[in-house]
Image 1 (tube, rainbow, N blue to C red):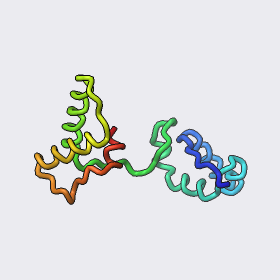
Image 2 (image 1 turned 45 degrees about the vertical axis):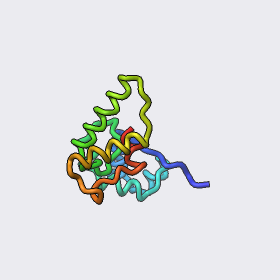
Image 3 (image 1 turned 180 degrees about the vertical axis):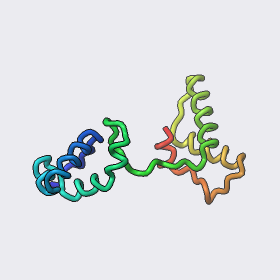
Image 4 (image 1 turned 120 degrees about the horizontal axis):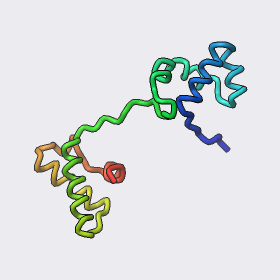
Length: 122
Protein backbone atom coordinates (compact mmCIF):
# COMPACT_ATOMS: atom_id res chain seq x y z
CA UNK A 1 0.00 0.00 0.00
CA UNK A 2 1.34 3.45 -0.92
CA UNK A 3 2.11 5.97 1.80
CA UNK A 4 -0.40 8.74 2.30
CA UNK A 5 0.62 12.14 0.97
CA UNK A 6 1.24 14.63 3.78
CA UNK A 7 1.24 18.43 3.67
CA UNK A 8 3.69 20.18 5.97
CA UNK A 9 3.37 23.79 7.07
CA UNK A 10 6.05 26.42 6.51
CA UNK A 11 7.20 26.24 10.15
CA UNK A 12 8.09 22.54 9.78
CA UNK A 13 9.79 23.14 6.42
CA UNK A 14 11.85 26.02 7.85
CA UNK A 15 13.12 23.89 10.70
CA UNK A 16 13.99 21.11 8.24
CA UNK A 17 15.93 23.57 6.06
CA UNK A 18 17.87 24.92 9.03
CA UNK A 19 18.72 21.38 10.14
CA UNK A 20 19.77 20.44 6.59
CA UNK A 21 22.13 23.41 6.46
CA UNK A 22 23.91 22.09 9.55
CA UNK A 23 23.90 18.38 8.67
CA UNK A 24 23.28 16.61 5.37
CA UNK A 25 19.90 16.25 3.68
CA UNK A 26 19.70 12.48 4.04
CA UNK A 27 20.20 12.60 7.82
CA UNK A 28 17.48 15.22 8.19
CA UNK A 29 15.18 13.19 5.96
CA UNK A 30 15.65 10.10 8.13
CA UNK A 31 15.17 12.06 11.34
CA UNK A 32 11.95 13.72 10.12
CA UNK A 33 10.68 10.65 8.23
CA UNK A 34 10.60 12.56 4.93
CA UNK A 35 12.03 11.65 1.53
CA UNK A 36 15.39 13.29 0.82
CA UNK A 37 14.17 14.82 -2.46
CA UNK A 38 11.51 16.64 -0.45
CA UNK A 39 14.21 18.25 1.70
CA UNK A 40 16.10 19.29 -1.44
CA UNK A 41 12.92 20.81 -2.87
CA UNK A 42 12.30 22.78 0.30
CA UNK A 43 15.87 24.09 0.21
CA UNK A 44 15.23 25.36 -3.31
CA UNK A 45 12.10 27.14 -2.00
CA UNK A 46 14.01 28.57 0.97
CA UNK A 47 13.39 32.24 0.21
CA UNK A 48 9.63 31.84 -0.32
CA UNK A 49 9.29 29.67 2.79
CA UNK A 50 11.03 32.15 5.06
CA UNK A 51 8.98 35.06 3.70
CA UNK A 52 5.64 33.29 4.14
CA UNK A 53 3.40 32.90 7.17
CA UNK A 54 4.43 29.99 9.43
CA UNK A 55 1.11 28.16 9.03
CA UNK A 56 1.03 28.27 5.25
CA UNK A 57 1.06 24.87 3.55
CA UNK A 58 0.74 25.25 -0.22
CA UNK A 59 3.52 26.67 -2.37
CA UNK A 60 2.27 25.84 -5.81
CA UNK A 61 1.23 28.41 -8.33
CA UNK A 62 -1.99 30.26 -7.53
CA UNK A 63 -5.06 29.52 -9.55
CA UNK A 64 -5.57 32.18 -12.19
CA UNK A 65 -9.17 32.92 -13.01
CA UNK A 66 -9.94 33.96 -16.56
CA UNK A 67 -13.59 34.93 -16.23
CA UNK A 68 -13.95 36.68 -12.88
CA UNK A 69 -16.79 38.93 -14.06
CA UNK A 70 -18.75 35.92 -15.31
CA UNK A 71 -18.21 34.12 -12.00
CA UNK A 72 -19.43 37.18 -10.07
CA UNK A 73 -22.65 37.25 -12.10
CA UNK A 74 -23.23 33.52 -11.62
CA UNK A 75 -22.54 33.90 -7.88
CA UNK A 76 -25.13 36.70 -7.69
CA UNK A 77 -27.62 34.41 -9.43
CA UNK A 78 -26.92 31.58 -6.98
CA UNK A 79 -27.31 33.88 -3.97
CA UNK A 80 -30.54 35.27 -5.39
CA UNK A 81 -31.94 31.77 -5.92
CA UNK A 82 -30.98 30.67 -2.42
CA UNK A 83 -32.52 33.80 -0.90
CA UNK A 84 -35.78 32.80 -2.59
CA UNK A 85 -35.35 29.36 -0.99
CA UNK A 86 -34.93 27.71 -4.39
CA UNK A 87 -32.54 24.84 -4.89
CA UNK A 88 -29.40 25.30 -6.97
CA UNK A 89 -27.69 22.29 -8.53
CA UNK A 90 -24.67 21.82 -10.78
CA UNK A 91 -26.74 21.68 -13.97
CA UNK A 92 -28.46 25.00 -13.17
CA UNK A 93 -25.11 26.65 -12.48
CA UNK A 94 -23.76 25.33 -15.79
CA UNK A 95 -26.82 26.60 -17.65
CA UNK A 96 -26.58 30.07 -16.06
CA UNK A 97 -22.82 30.26 -16.70
CA UNK A 98 -23.30 29.42 -20.38
CA UNK A 99 -26.09 32.00 -20.60
CA UNK A 100 -23.95 34.72 -19.00
CA UNK A 101 -20.99 33.78 -21.22
CA UNK A 102 -23.20 34.13 -24.29
CA UNK A 103 -24.39 37.56 -23.06
CA UNK A 104 -20.81 38.67 -22.43
CA UNK A 105 -19.71 37.49 -25.88
CA UNK A 106 -17.27 34.87 -24.59
CA UNK A 107 -16.72 32.23 -27.31
CA UNK A 108 -17.72 28.67 -26.44
CA UNK A 109 -14.13 27.52 -27.16
CA UNK A 110 -12.86 29.77 -24.33
CA UNK A 111 -15.45 28.85 -21.71
CA UNK A 112 -17.28 25.54 -21.56
CA UNK A 113 -18.90 25.63 -18.09
CA UNK A 114 -17.93 22.00 -17.57
CA UNK A 115 -19.23 19.91 -14.72
CA UNK A 116 -15.82 20.13 -13.04
CA UNK A 117 -15.87 23.94 -13.27
CA UNK A 118 -19.36 24.04 -11.76
CA UNK A 119 -18.42 21.71 -8.89
CA UNK A 120 -15.38 23.85 -8.05
CA UNK A 121 -17.56 26.95 -8.33
CA UNK A 122 -19.93 25.64 -5.67
